[in-house]
Length: 245
Image (tube, rainbow, N blue to C red; front, side):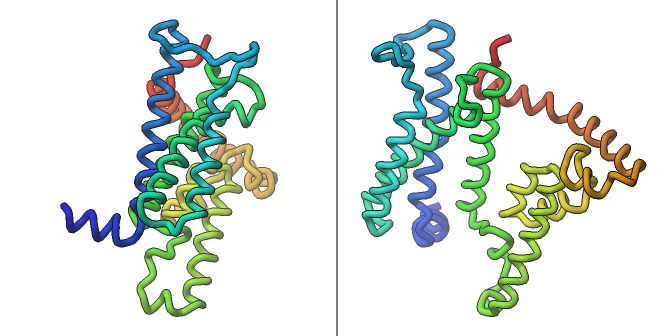
């Protein structure tokens, strides 16, 4: 176990990233527990309202991100300082992304259906950071052999092809697949060759004169949403709390 830890975490310099990920996830979970207790009127916790202004936790989150970021830039990326910077930055990201929906809508939608977007972003961010921590690099660069990495043309070609897959998946209305496909090219390829969603730019451009393809796209999107959207909402509600009715 110690050999694995040194070879995969310490030697590649991924310990700060691991600390940032752990503090990010832990901060988000603790924050959700506290906000749910405040919502239920239990425990000693209350909203912070100095002078009648509700200070959302995105504010201390931004402060922690700024402090952690500058500490990281001022150091050499090693030692105790790098660990402190990673923890502070991870805590800040957890607080900020927990109110991502508020930033997106410029409104306090924390306990509404729109507010569940914050939980989705947190899950996606944690998954992407975990992929980087596991050694995945953008656009399949990690899959190249040392000889291929030394060949610039091979690197550029690999990046360009995988980037194209991700862009096509995005234009087909599959944003989550496109983002994950940046690190796992096979996922982007899967999204690129599948039918586009009916309201996507790809469908509006290429399915306009293809009624059969447009109909298949609508049926597939309906079946997919019926099968997975309800499950995704349940998971988000379990993690972040059900929105107000």
